[in-house]
Length: 399
Image 1 (tube, rainbow, N blue to C red):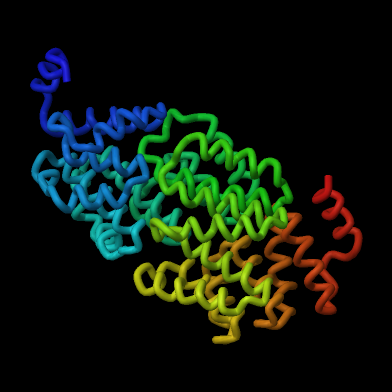
Image 2: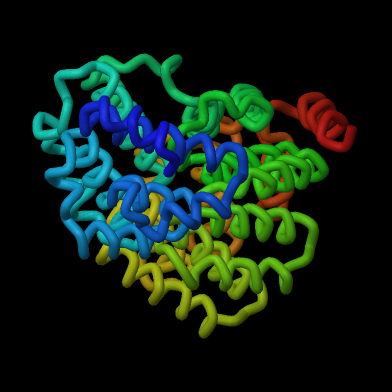
């Protein structure tokens, strides 16, 4: 640090210094300067513990960030801003590793948030918790938090708005916000939801049969070097599965389960499906065992849904719990995938496909609808809407 910078910082309060450092760390990440981020991550004396932990987090080294914050708790007293950021990133680091207690407590005890009375800081914390909930697939909880904190959706980043739209089945808005978010890096800040947004949008594009667009979006996502980058491997695996490259998909999915826990429920569910398609019940059972362990540590709705789905597909429980939870979560593409897999593996009455097909009618998912029509006909069920609607949708899908 040069002498002029030292003189400037000497005139600032501890809170102002922390905010300045945080801004620099965010800017370095957005500009792709990983070398300087890595230097800050080593916690040199002129950088706070909180700033170094943020640098580690933005380098996707969440385990190291958690260890730094746990091993040096000076961030609790350095400044109020440091305390806010240290608690936020410490809770996120534990959550991504599969330890959700601290995150849950911070979410339910929001009156204890540092600097809560300052609107700017309350909004920053609200946005971070909303993002984390969306990464976990918790749409209803994210919407409830926005309502409770009187925070407008228009105040969210494009990545969060894209994920919300995808979960609601609003495909066009999900793709629009994803593309806008990739093009505009000016509001990213601590954009911990970028990789999850790419995964959800790739899923939307695949439901439309837009394979090239899905690959292009994934490539753009990798270029930004986002946090939680293993979710991009899950997205790539879904493209591989859609393209018939199941062996490569399985390799990617296994790789995605070897680090952070968040999002691995999706990987394990897809691995179980690949195993069941190959009549490999042993492989499917291994995936279920991993989901059972994950559900014990992180019992989110999506994790529980995937656990019930694989249990039902293996014949270990009726499908009623899986279908109830899928309907309760009100995420159309998620419901469609669950119902299709249950029917394909003989776990539920094929009549459920009619309901799901009609739910998908409000979304833009022609490829998924085509798959459901084929499955309905295989089971002697005539798809609703008649031949004219089917022909029109098929023409749109192949165009």
